[in-house]
Length: 389
Image 1 (spheres, rainbow, N blue to C red):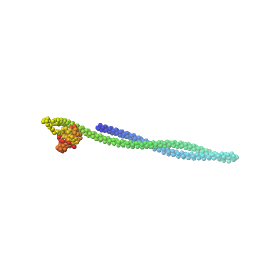
Image 2 (image 1 turned 135 degrees about the vertical axis):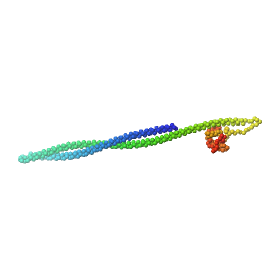
Image 3 (image 1 turned 90 degrees about the vertical axis):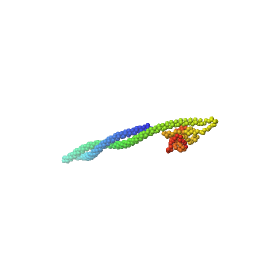
Image 4 (image 1 turned 60 degrees about the vertical axis):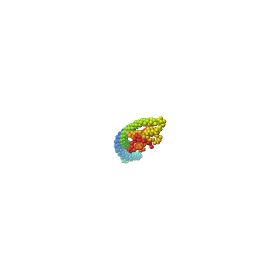
């Protein structure tokens, strides 16, 4: 029993120590994970802030580029309208030139067809042709200027178109960068949210582990109290065992004394029995004097051989010895007449019941019985009558 209790206590102690160690390790690992997650969250927040700043800068650059593009588009529109005007003017000038050329060709043909006229008319005609040539030359100069302006406007338009394409490419690049930054910010926000949720789960797990650790501590306290109670119970049981051993020793001593008393009584009874047998044999011999046979009455000996009892349903006898110290008596009723362990006999003196006894050991011709009860003012004595009911 003691070994089992010790083994259970040792197993419980080892289990509690292991559970405490596991809980401590779990708490430490959860703290480390928490610190790591917090550092990652801080890093993600910093990255998100930097990406947000970059996104804001990109938006600002995009707005500037957009306004610049709008300005360039307006300039391109103005240059295009001016170019269109110059084209119209150029075309009008060309048309006028062609009309003048037609007129000149027509006049030359008419002049060749007409006969010779006077010098005055020739002079007036020369002045007319001079003015015509002058107008032609002016128109050619004007057309050349318009052509140069048109070419310069075309060059300017091409440059503006190139700048527009460059700005468009830059705008597309900025838009791509903005989209990448928005994706990175969304990913950072999603990662921050996931890390926050993970941190919340870690906190909940830590709370659960803390509650489990507190419960383990409470269980450990309860087990310690149970162990103290078991130790007290063990001490109590040890004391009871010592008391039982002492009682056992006392009972063994009583039994030894009872056996000794029974042996002594048996020796005495055997001697008495031998004497009675010898006396019976002497009285049964015929007398030779006067050739008369004298028949003596039968001798009844109480406390001797009880083999002559015929009614075994109600046994009777007498007390042979009384042991007041150990509270038992020896009666002359044995196994030969039906005595058994546990039988109750009643002690009588002058037809008055004074006590009751219970058989605890049985021999062939005698028995030992504990005194169970005694009437007030009475004491069992040697020679008292014993009967069963």
